[in-house]
Image (cartoon, rainbow, N blue to C red; front, side, top):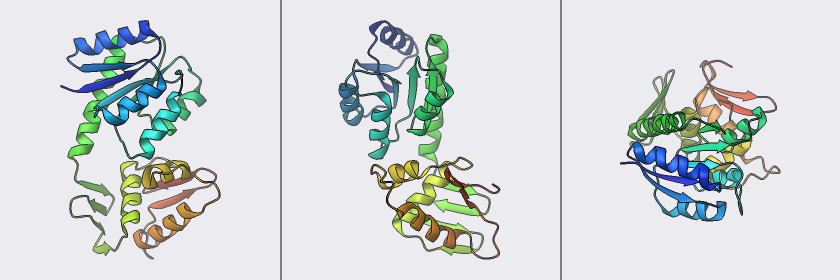
Length: 226
C-alpha cells in the first residue's frame, strides 16, 4: 500500500483529496502548511506527494526545489488554482512531475497519482539506461558507447544518468546543478559548462553522431537529434 503525503492549506480541498485517495486504498497523511509539509516530506518516507502551489509559511516551488536539491526523487503532483502556462512550466521545472489545475475532478486526481506511482516504480526497477548505442549500467557503474567503455568520474556518471533519464528534454543549468550537485544554482559559476564539456568529449568522440547538445539560451539536451 503506497503512502502519500498531501500538503494543502484549504481543508475542504484536503478532505476531498484524502477521501478519494483512501478510497483507492492509499495511506494518506496531511500537512496544512509548507513548513510542516517539508519536514514530513523529508522524514516520512512517502511514495508520492500531492502539493498545493500556494501555501502558508513556505510555497510549493520552494518545497519541491528543496527536496530535489537533497536528491529526494519522490513523485510530486502539484495542485494549484494558478492555471497560466508559465505557472505550470515553473512548477514542472522546479521538479514537479505533474501539474493539476483547480478545480479538479477527484477521479482524475487519483488517476494521475496512480500513473506517477507506476512510472516511478518502473524507474526504480530499471538498472540499465539506453539511448541509441549509449548504455549506462547502474549496478556495475559502467558506461559504454558502441564498443567503447567510457572512463567517467563519479560526477560525470551522475550527470550522464540524469541526462539519460530525461532523454529528449531541455535541461537548464539550474536543473542540472540542483539535481546532480544538490546545491542552489550560482549563476556566476561555470561548473556546469566545464563538466558538460568533459562529458561531451567522452560520449561524443570524433566520428560519432553527437548525443549531447547545447540548446542556446536554455541549457542542454541528450538526444539523437536536436
